[in-house]
Amino acid sequence: MIDDTRVTASDVFVAMLARDLRVARREIGFTLVRTLMQPTLLMIVFGYLLPKMQMLPRAYVTTLLPGVLAVSLALSAVQSVALPMVASFGATREIEDRLLAPLATHLVALELVVVGVIQGIVAGLIVLPLGRVIMGTVPGLTLSSLGLTLGMMILSASAFSTLGLWLGCAVNVNQIGLMFSFIVAPMLFFGCTYYPWDGLHVVPWLQKAVLLNPLVYVSEGMRGVLTPGVPHMDPAVVAFALTGVTVIAWWFGLRAFYKRAVG
Amino acid sequence: MIETIALRKAYAAPLTRRRAGSGDATRSGPVLALDGLDIAIQPGEFFGLLGPNGAGKTTTIGILTTRVRATSGQAFVAGVDVASHGELVRRRIGVVPQRPNPDRGLSVLENLLFHGAYFCLPRAFTAQRSGQLLEQLGISDKADAKVDELSGGQQQRLMIARALLHEPQVIFLDEPTVGLDPQARLSLWEILRTLHRDGRTIVMTTHYMEEADQLCGRLAIVDQGRLLACDTPAALKARAPGETLIDLQLDRPADGASDACRAVPGVSRVDVSDHDVRAYCMRGGEALPGLIKAVEAHGHTVRNINLAKPSLETLFIALTGRRLD
Ligand SMILES: Nc1ncnc2c1ncn2[C@@H]1O[C@H](COP(=O)(O)OP(=O)(O)OP(=O)(O)O)[C@@H](O)[C@H]1O
Ligand SMILES: [Mg+2]
Image (cartoon, rainbow over all chains, first blue to last red):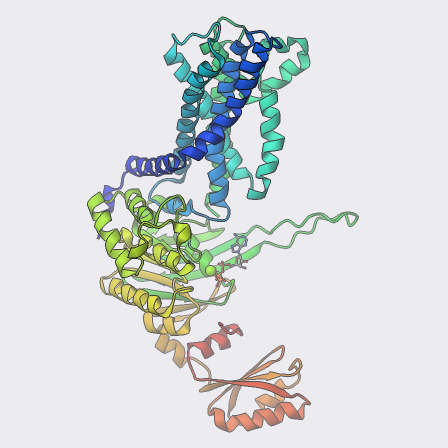
């Protein structure tokens, strides 16, 4: 019989991480299309065609790139946690194997979040050079503070990955479509992705209202580290807000996860 | 080593929507799946849980395997409290669920390899044991198949292989042979007998009396969340009332005929439910004509007659008022 003292939480955690990365790698084609289609199209139309037609100023790409990056990163993080979770808590119950593994339930949830963070960052790291290729030179783009950029990406991906945990537990299979049109779409358009937050001062009440949208901080955070020359929120404020989102979403997400995981 | 003490589980009632106009929200009471269940299973026992649909078998296994939280009461597995030390319990158990839930992102073999990794087994050991289990369960030709390409019974076999991979001390099987063909059923029986000889503790639910009779050292009969009887199959069979169970199906609801049936010589007990009259008799052949006369005298017509030998089945019907088919 197997000696059960050899079981250590970190080994189990790593094994589950390996499982998720194996599955992600297998689905990489599908994942790339899912995460890259929208930003690619956006950058072609708004970052290449419209400026070339002179319907948008060339400098607009400076605003657009961090925003597109933010969307890809955030959506990728949220989806890679929420979508499989909805399925595996629904019909397939395939998460059961991991819930029966010798690992505390909150660590199973944490592992799912870590996978989301990794997927979000990977999406961001792919979109960045892609944007450069499609849109040509981006005025004001500095890649000097790569460490800061990576840090901001981690914070952003953590916020949206934990939000994915919460959503994935709160939503049923038949509500997924609804979730995208009612939560994700408004979040995208009022997420300061296609315009800087500073510009919203033209509609003061809206400028305050969008502060409830976590995507705003991701977009503004990316502006702060990628294009520090244009107006943007203070990165310290952004970091604080994203940490707050992560803590709150983790708290509610974990409670929802327990409710789903232990009947 | 496995013990439940006054175990209760109430599932929250599904909220039925407030009817427009009527004003009051209707909420049926919570579903009481377990109602004070006490069971004690010794190390090394082969223990069976028997009960009709909805009796609470899966709920009991869910609580013991840390997947369902009890509303009140306590449960211990391998001497460990499942509510407070779930992770320790999970190290020692293997679970075959009622509905197969393989990891669909992985191939058949990967399901086992990753399962081994979750239990921190050495890779070489996992690989060797996976091959051996797939062979034993007759799905080694499917090792590299996607899970979705397996038939229902093959998925069930994979679930069994996965539950046994890490050589758990305690094995829970929730209706493991449902969906298996006769050959696979026999080979599972063989595997379970071997494990039992090796000293593992096995807890199994089943609807098949023959299976319970053949495999289990002790059986608990559960209905509506309560323990009705718990003993060896032989002792339980000896408790079955009468020698033969005669089941008469009538053309219309049988009420009224029961007293007349009870008066028939040789009948020791009569249960009536809907169109059915169940009579437990000492000698079936002698009582049968009398019974038919008695119901016909009440204006009933007999549509069908079933005779059952004394068995777990007759006891089960006597205890729960239900058949197990
Ligand atoms: N998740 C749930 N939510 C609400 N009620 C539930 C849930 N699971 C089970 N029940 C109810 O609890 C009772 C016991 O169910 P359980 O699944 O334990 O029965 P069982 O003995 O395993 O039956 P079967 O032989 O059909 O598998 C049933 O009345 C069932 O409707
Ligand atoms: Mg069941």
